[in-house]
Length: 475
Image 1 (cartoon, rainbow, N blue to C red):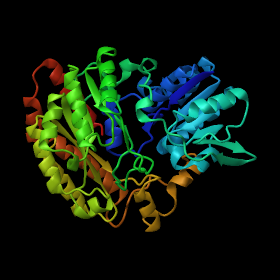
Image 2 (image 1 turned 135 degrees about the horizontal axis):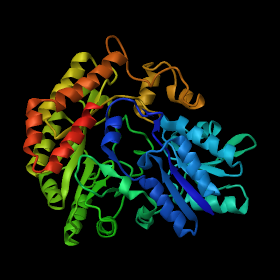
Image 3 (image 1 turned 90 degrees about the vertical axis):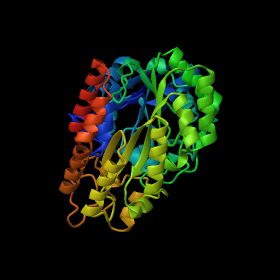
Image 4 (image 1 turned 120 degrees about the horizontal axis):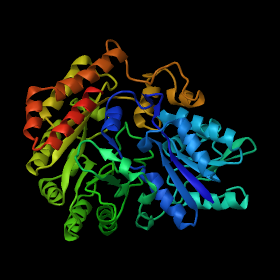
C-alpha cells in the first residue's frame, strides 16, 4: 500500500497555535528537528513492504493547503497524521480537505491528542482510525486489516468507528525498544533541520529512551505513565555512528526527556562514543538531581556541549505543586558542576503558576539571572490536558470549565483564550508583559552581552550571535 505520513504545520496564517507565549515559540524560532516518531514508523512500514512518503510541514514551512495539495499529488491509499492538542484545528482542516478531494482515502490519526482524548478525538475528526500510544506494532497490523477489507478487531491500540460508536481495542502492544529499527532518515528533508544555538551545518536528533520515570505535574501522563524504556548503549551508539558517518551530522540533539535518568547507562553511552572515535557535538535534557561531577566530565569528553535543565521556578511551593522534587540549592550545585566540566547550560523557567504573586514571579526572574545560565527559556504556565496540573485546576475551580474538551469539540473556535492562572493582579496582560520583561532583562544585561561578545572568535560567530539576538527580541 502507499502511505503518506504527515507532520502537520504549527502555523496558521502566521499565528503559532501553541501556547502563544514563551518557550514554545522561542524554541520554534531557534530549532526545527526531525519528527522522529514518524521516521520510526516510516522505517517499520518500509520493512513491511509498504511504499512510504513523509511530509514534514514544519521543516518545509508549508501551510495546511499546501499539505493537502502535496498529499493528493502522491495519491496515497492511507494517510497517517500526528496531532498535539493545540494544533487540533489544523489537523481537522487538513483531514476534512483530504476527504473532500479523495473520499476513498483512509486516514489514521496518532500522537498525544489521540492518546489523551481517544473517544473525543475520533468523534470530532475525519479520522477513520486512531492509534493510542506507540504505533510500531499497531500500524502494520491495521494496514493489513485495511488491505483485507476487514475491521481491525483485536489489534491493540487501534480505535475505529462501529455502529456510530468508537471501538477501542485496548493498549497497544509495545515492540522491544532495541528491536525498533532506526528512524528512516532518508525520507526526511534533512537539509531543512537546524539549531540556531549551534553553528553546525548538519543537525539531527536521536531518542535513546522513551517515557520518563519522573512525575512532574505539568507533563502529560502518557509520557510519565510508568513506561520508561531505555535503549542499550550499543544500540544507541550504532545509530549515532550512522548519523555521523552516513548523514554527516556534526551536531546531534539527544531528545530524551531525561537523558541521565540512569547515570550508569549515560556513562556507558559516553564511553562507547569515545571507543568508536565518533567526533560530534551533542546536547541533552536532564534534571539537576540526575548529574554528578564525574558524569559531567565524562559527558564533556564524549562531546556534550550543552545541557538543558528544567528549573521551572525559584519558589519552593511552586516546585512542590509541579512535583519537581528539587531545590534551588540543587540547581546551584548542578550548574556549578556543569560549568566546571566546560558544558554550556540552558535553563527552563515557568511563570504564573497557581497562587503566584507578582513578587514571586519577580523572584524567579531575579534568581534566573543570578543563576546565569548560558541560555534561558521562559514560558507562561498553561495547564494542558492529560496532566495532573490540569486536573488540579479543574478540581479547584482555577479554570471555569473543561477548556480542552470544548476546544476539541468546537475545533478550536472557542472565544475563550488559552487557560492561564489569572487571579487578582495576575492578569493575562501582566503575564505577557512579565514574559517579555524576563527575556529582555536576561539577554539585554551588559554583563551577559559582554560575555557573549567575548566568546566571538570569527565572522560566523558574530553572524550567529546576531541571529540569536533577533530570535530573542522576537519572542
